[in-house]
Length: 176
Length: 178
Image 1 (cartoon, each protein chain N blue to C red):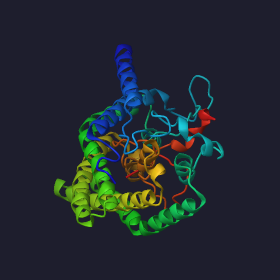
Image 2: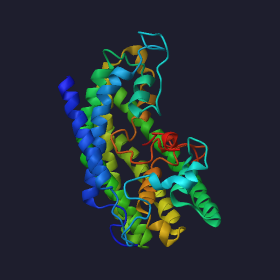
Image 3: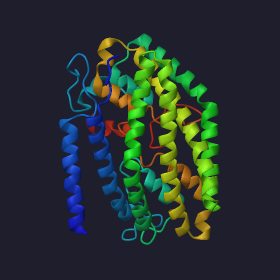
């Protein structure tokens, strides 16, 4: 397998930049899209769900965040965390690619340092998630706190690019 | 606020155009990428045969167009990896919960750091399983399939979180991650 088979740094940077930008745009818009109750206030009809819920939507739903007062604040917390997470996510992506190449080239001695490096970056990412979660937790009302641990599970990887994986199962809708 | 949104939309549009013009995966040996550079257009024939939405295996098949023996080989690889990932998955879930509880209890930073490290160790182990399985899948393919960069790229991202579900990996992918 030739070096650089999957990704080049330049391409990764563009990809990550795009995802980060898209995410930054998506979060504020979610604040409007999330229903505060069972349906929309104006019509009473349930919201139309186009595609899968985002992780942020699931997170907000799990905590039953108030769409007017809490969701925008939590959105800002996530957006700020996303900025810190972007370089870490980029390194994690590169390390995953390097790990595959090391395995493909039968270089078992190379995999351990890569896994160790990945663990260090994963720790940075988990710390970013934990800091964001702490800020969110501080905003919660007592009745919302009971779901906080489950909500934190939904934050896993929320600041990393999902690439083509997440939600791809839906893509056939328009294509065929 | 509207102006800010408009700006963000423009940035997103430019970024999207960059993505289309420069797919994030470099094309490899054969200089081509056989299936139409920018995207998923070529994933067509097999994909159309599956009901919507597609599961992970269906997505892989749609992208790589497996031959019959390859379907079985890939399934075996991913079944094994899913089985091997079981203890890591459980440890990962536990470590995540411990970290959440540490934050909720406003524990000292040193205690949170320990929880973070513990979680990161499991995250790295899970990633190693995913990437190892991915490499084995690639090894099960022939040259034409391996040089299909859009398919390889899609599969690379598809691996993320593939073994998080305790029951099965071949499900419609969601955004669950770790």
